[in-house]
Amino acid sequence: MAYNTTPFHGKVTRVEKNNVAMDFAGGWSLTVALDMADISRHGQHWKEGLPGQAGWSGSFTALLVLGNTEQKAFIDNLVTATPGTKLTDVKFLLDGTTNAFNGNLYITGVSIGTSNTDKVSATFNFQGDGALTVSDAA
Amino acid sequence: MTNLLAALTTKTTGSTLATLTGGRIYTDEAPAGAAFPYVVLSIISTVPEYPANKTIENVLIQFSLVSTSPGLAEIGALLAALRALYDDASLTITDSTLVYCIRESFGAFTMEAATPSGTTTIRQWTQDYSLATVS
Image (cartoon, rainbow over all chains, first blue to last red; front, side, top):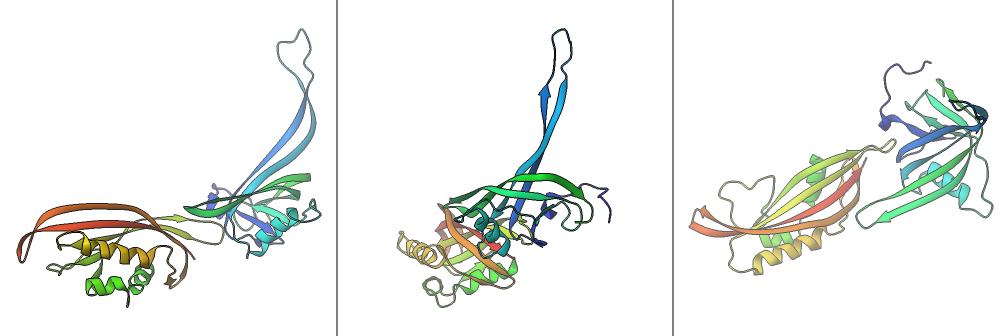
């Protein structure tokens, strides 16, 4: 396996659960951030910072199809009597096969959007739990 | 796209629309000298969408209803029959599945045109439909 040497096209990206790509996914976004404490002091011309903890979160979208096993599993993770079960089998693939981000996460929000003139969509928000990794052999 | 056109055409079989037009329901253009009234089905645009593992085609189609009958009775009946047939219709399409078929914009105009029987007033009403198919 190897990392890509040309840009990915968004249409080949996938969200996988239990090694199965979720059908009808529309795209995903993932943000990794590092907390920084400001340790700037009087008399300095330039700010200084002290790194804290890193975290990651994001969202993914889909055309809502509840008959799809993976979509239903994401919904059921949150819409349940006891929400807050950590998911350990989700991957965010960039090329549909190998290059991917991996990590444990919690589903923190699900938004369903409907209109009279378009397909019903769903947005799933997640919060990473622990380290995020990037791999060329998903 | 040909499968979608075939499904839309097949839908007219035995319909009031087919009866009112004498079966003169054409794709893209009417043949020269076609008798009135008739209907022409055209694809205006199709925009693909690629959710994971699927392809959705968002298709805008237009039906042109053409009549030379004085007054609005004939063409009005054609429009009513068309809408009864395609508003929120179900379609059986080879190789794909219909997601929806929704009525969109309507337009109307008249023109003077030369026909085999001389100059006549042609009334043309257009009715657009938005469809989505998934495969």
